[in-house]
Structures are given as structure tokens and as C-alpha cells.
Image (cartoon, rainbow, N blue to C red; front, side, top):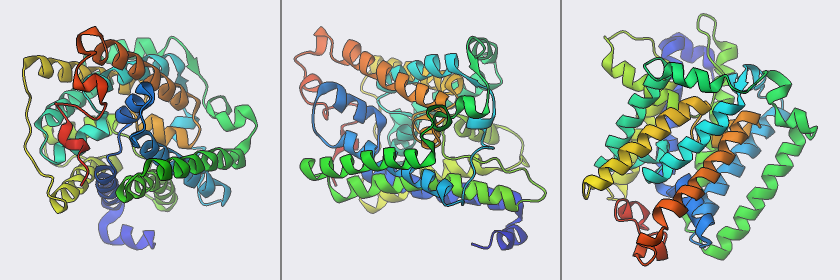
Length: 374
């Protein structure tokens, strides 16, 4: 790719934004086709079922880690300057924020990226939840919730550099990271065969993982080629980008563009194209006030928790994990733990023990259409 040529034609800012839109479009398409969803993976694991949702997530996770570490070993990528590794991190923010995000993910019946994908196919519940998520994230970043977030993040911090790099802390290096990812990818392949995971399930999930690794690589290459613009080395996340996109819409025209502002519209468009091609566009609303309260509460927890943790289910759980950031792995662990606990206390309590949702994890009156096989 001739990056200098793109800069000359579209400008540095326009090229970086277009990059975000292109990667986002492919991410949205693959995420929609594969039904990629951390919430579904957690529920399947917690309820000891074998429906392939966990396998789909493992394909994405292992692919993203494997390719990212391979790019580093080949000398194509240097992530040492990325914010997730170079800046001071917050372990308290990662732990508490991850727990809040995991709880909210169960209540809202989808993580932030999944809500965006569902909104693109006409799910109005996901659209409202996404808006609440973005508003809360912005409030936690620079608004009324910012002092609370900063206070909680300051409780337990860790220096940037080697102190945040699990590969350096453990001494296994990038080769060890590749071996780790290869083992999980092999496991996903075995489980996919046993569970008869459909083509778009595993192929789309791999595509999602490729987009995470590709974002790391391309933003690094763009950062090296840029002259007038500082291009952050980053991958995919949806907490900060959702808040930035909201502020772009609400602010006067002429705001500076960047990778994140191309990412969110790209994901929405990619998921919409997938839904349109497979005739899955369908308007869906709430089934009652109680469901609406649940979704709003979940979106609020995800918005604040994601900003406190410095990443969401994709930003920390996939992108951050792919570069073995300590805080990202803490966030991913607490997302899983809190989500499993919330599922047990809220969705598997005595009041629903005999309901279809407790017996069949695929049964979800709010998102049943999202699990339908094409």
C-alpha cells in the first residue's frame, strides 16, 4: 500500500479516518455474520452448553493474538509506543471497570460492539442502549462522571512500559505469545469440528480477529508515514470511539477527524450490509418497561465501566489482550467473572429456573432474532 500516495490524495487526517472506516466496515460485516458476542460466549461457558458461541469468540481471540504477535516478530509492528503499554495504567480501574462492564453486558444482552451490530439490522433496543452507552462514556471521560472515574482509577496504578507488558513480566517473549495463541486456535478448530460450527461462524470470527490485528499494523504504518499529524498506534475499541462519534454529531461542523470517527460508522455500515444481503433487516422494540429499565441500566454500567477500565469487550478483551497488556487482561478476567455471576443471580435465579431462557441459553425474548441461523 502506498501510504504516501493516500496522504497526497486525501490528506493525512482523511486517510486515517478512511482507514478506520474500511476496517470498521469489514469488522461489522464479519461480526454480524459470525454472531460474534462475548456475552453469548460467557453464558455458554457458565451454563455448560455446547452451542458454538464460545468457539466463535475463541477464533476471534486467538486469531487477533496470533497475527498481532506474528507482525511484531516479523518486525512489521512495534506496539511499545501504544497507549495501552507506554502510559501509566490503572489496575483498580481495570478490575472495577471490567466488573461493571461485565454486569452491564448481561443486563443489556450484548456488549457495546454487539449492540452496534444489532442496531444496524433494526434492533431499536440495541440502538437506545448504544446511545445511553455513548452518553455515559462521554460523561465519564470529560463530563460530570469524570471526577468519580479519575478517583477510582487512582486507587491502584501501574507504571507504563515493562510493568504493563505481560510478555516482559513473564519472560516468555513474543514467541511465547504466538505459541499461546496457536494453542487456543487449535482448540477452537477442534471444538468447531465437534460442535458443527457453521462456515460463517468460524470464518467470520477469524475475519473479526484479522481486523483487530490489521488495525494495529496499519495504524503503526500510518504513524510512521505521517508528517503533520500524530497518528496514535491503536486497534479496535468502542468506548472512546462511541463517545467521540456522539460529540462529532452534537458539535459544530469542522471537527477534526481521526481513526475512531471512521470506525463507528464503518461498523454500522458493514453490519447493515450483511443484514441486508441475508435479509435480516427487521425493526424490533422493547416488550415492556421492565426490559427497558434493564437495558438502560446495563448500558450505563458498560459506558462508565468501559471508560474506567480503558477498554470494552473488544478494546481490552481482544485488542489489548493481543498485545498482552496487563490491565487489559485484568479487565477481560473481571468482565468474565462479573458476567458469569450476574447471569447466575439475575437470569438464572429462582424466578426463571423453569423458564425457556434458563433451559435453553439461545432463548432470549429480547434478542431471539439475533441468534437465528441464516
